[in-house]
Length: 313
Image (cartoon, rainbow, N blue to C red; front, side, top):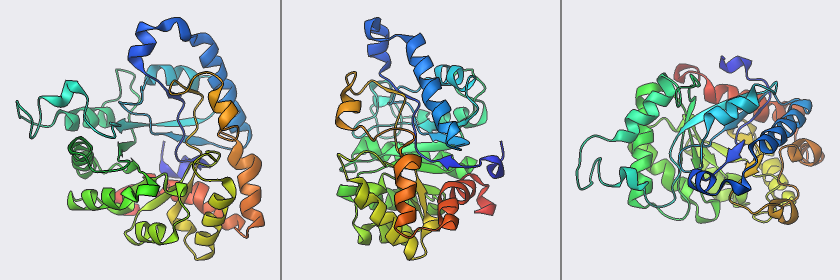
């Protein structure tokens, strides 16, 4: 698929967030047929709202299972864009702990080989190729977090694929991520600073934008972190300043997430669902003065530019 064929895009949604060890060793809580059917229903609801594509940044550390996602995708008329990378807020997995740069055994960085193969050959023998890279930082830059960022940066330089970073907006760690990636030779115009919408700190958001990146206003419905009215007001303010071309929209929702016991998400965060943007947020943005052209820029134009070749950004 070419970037101009993406249509309306939600730039940060998960299909499944899993824990593979728990799933394999305690399967009593895993009803795959029910979970797949539920995912199909949820994604069909999103397609019914006019969404053509979701960008799924589920990587190692979040239980990525591309064959399972492909099974769902075969039943839904929606594009699901897969990622490669590694999610950690602290250390790398023990399987990588003792070998690689700066470790006991030293040697080349195996993550570079892993991520590159996912992009150029496909993931887990499925033929599904990753179209972007993912790394994470929450409160601080640990050695493990920096090691992943450096591997992501190296693969970005060699392949040209863009990057999404999970960040902690209240800790302003998007700025740290930008500094590390810039130092490693990354084009910051090819980076989404994820979860930037968790703050109404306009100074912080302006700094991220001034550094050249997109800001992910991508947790609508997660009101426990920042209420919807503040998220809407922040997007409207930036759009009013002419910065719609630096924002992307989404929920960071999922069909099934093993991080939460059954029913907890629905009880504590009832708005944290795939369709909330279209049911409530977009009408509120319009009411706040965001134009149709600006909405199209955030949902269509910016994703298209993000996934375009480096020469076209």
